[in-house]
Length: 67
Image (cartoon, rainbow, N blue to C red; front, side, top):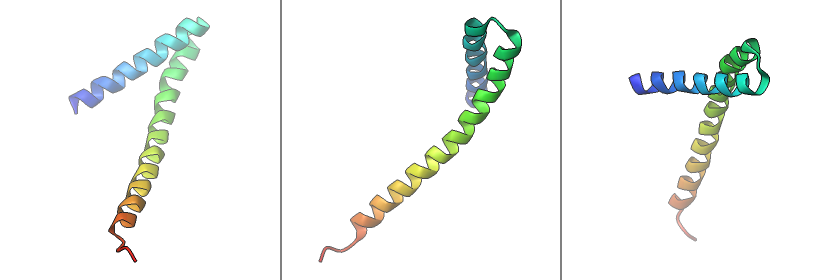
């Protein structure tokens, strides 16, 4: 859990730094540092669901007896 938390902090710090360097705005940098990881978390959820269903389909296909 410590590793997950530290990566979350690192992710937000990188997002803030990149946005701040690109815009020069603390407000924009802070907003992006909060919004981007939240959206990325949601995208990751759907990415995992896609691969779970793809792997389940492939597993089911390999378990079918050949005719």
